[in-house]
Image (cartoon, rainbow, N blue to C red; front, top):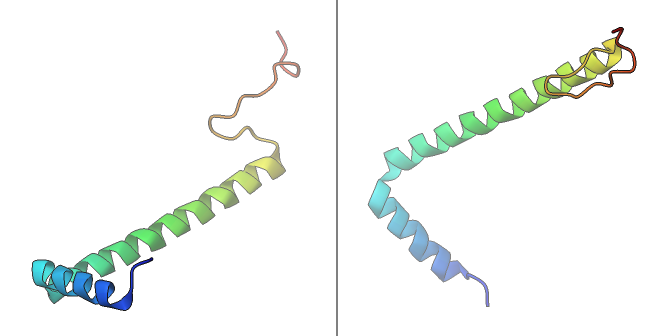
Length: 71
């Protein structure tokens, strides 16, 4: 009882009529750019975290133990 091909075609026609093909193309390009930017930011964050762990530096927002601190 899922959505069939006929229902998807009706939805597609309604979306094209409402937004137009140019607007849909722009929305698709913007969405693709946002996803690409998000993926690169996640990858960069993982690399920064790995580098910080290798150096023994605390990561932003990380709670560190006070055992090693001199009072």
